[in-house]
Amino acid sequence: MLEHGGRLRIAAKRYEIPLTDWLDLSTGINPGGWPVPALPAEVWARLPEDGDGLENAAASYYGCDRLLPVAGSQAAIQALPTLLPARQVGIIRPGYAEHAHAWRRAGHKVIGVAPEVLARGPGPVPWDVLVAINPNNPTGHRFAPEVLLAWHERLAERGGWLVVDEAYMDPTPEFSLAPYCPRPGLIVLRSLGKFFGLAGARVGFLLAEPDLLERLAALLGPWTVPGPSRWVAREALSDLRWQEAARESLPEASRRLAELLADAGLQPAGGCALFQWCSGAKAAQRHEALARQGILTRRFADPPGLRLGLPGSDAAWERLATALRA
Image (cartoon, rainbow, N blue to C red):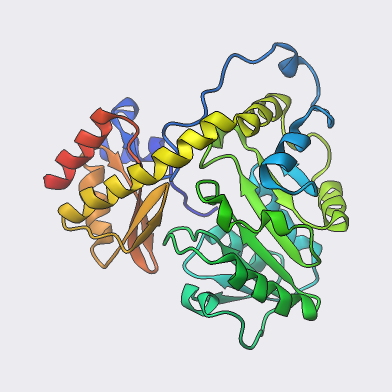
């Protein structure tokens, strides 16, 4: 299994710092997530059912009614490659490593594609499938919708797919390709884990043509999303007031983080509303120095860099500032 952020128990054991004493900035999850209320008792006692309002809430939120709830977008990332015979797949690099891992495991040939190549728009297309992450994780590179749609058009001409992972898109919905679905060969992945801060609920959506949705639903089987998670997701997707407030506060917090890092000599090379990305050969040393002070960041080796999420309280901001000064 690949390494991910949020491995607090492993860090606590390695650095001999109690679990409760850590500040976890390693995941890019909104620290002020949607406030989950007490759940009705019946959602724990019944099997999950379609028709409970989740799909309608998601259709309204994403502007697309051709979607499938899945157990986090990770479930779709793992399953999608099994629905195609072996092909050549271009995947943005650096990027969320589970994409390349899943396509290789299914027998496809994976070719890394630099964000700069995608940003220039379509040239020769040597792939049958192109996987983009928008905004990119970990660099924060964001692509204009018209650029990705041009790539989709080129791929669709040869019966190919454009897969766009929009896990960090919610603060900037105007850049999403969700409203353009369904189109032949266009697949969009969304998640409630980051913007809504509901990573533990394991709820995501795949937006695509009905035939592909049916094939994926058959592959995943029944009850992929638990009833309590469906209830929470429906309510969060319907809470327009909370969403508006979060879209105002998160970019401000991200700018504050960028300034704090720059003042400490860690000039961010990219980022989005939920994290900042600092590249450079000293990433490992900086990760280690912060970890020894009980602050967990996400270190990347290739290319070397450090991704930091947002502190969630005044005390957490001050703790990070003190650690950076040290």
